[in-house]
Length: 245
Image 1 (tube, rainbow, N blue to C red):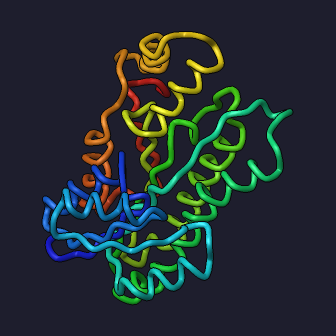
Image 2 (cartoon, one colour):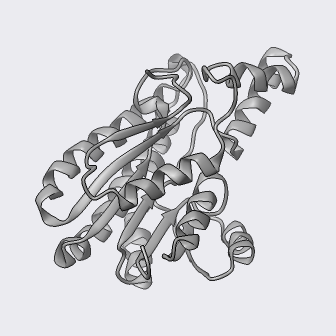
């Protein structure tokens, strides 16, 4: 990984920040990418020697401009994501499309942007941070599940497309992880059910057979392993304590 350039989308917090820290520690040159410049700058201050590029991964022109600005990319971690809950009958087309745009189309656009350079150099790693929602269904998050299932399909199709050309494409599928998204889910459970925050947290942790939330560093370790694993391609690695066995 020494001197390889890694771009981590959604790098301003949570899993993205943990992945950036892990890759930086292993010698990569890291660029944090995301929509919120203040968040990115805060992580830049925390991590030290990283670059920052503001980008909405769902915007095609913005993605093209952002990757043109950052230069050659050896490692792409598609981590940017968003989730909102609603029964399918109350899922608006706007919500459906927004979650597909951020979670699925963003992964497609960023992967497409880095692929020509990777193929020309005959080396590259793309790791898509999907979710256990790519492997199973969850009630009230149909749009998110559909998008993440799409990410897994994209991962497998692209992996075959580039398998003989020095590039690997894999997915990491975390269960409920200690991030802002899960903090939001806890707040939502509290607001809608009257449970306490502790009860809501325990409910989410209980989905994991280990009885706990996954930590961002655990996902980052799996991403880093995939970056170094040349023979692993087209895989979906669950980091969920055994939830999806």
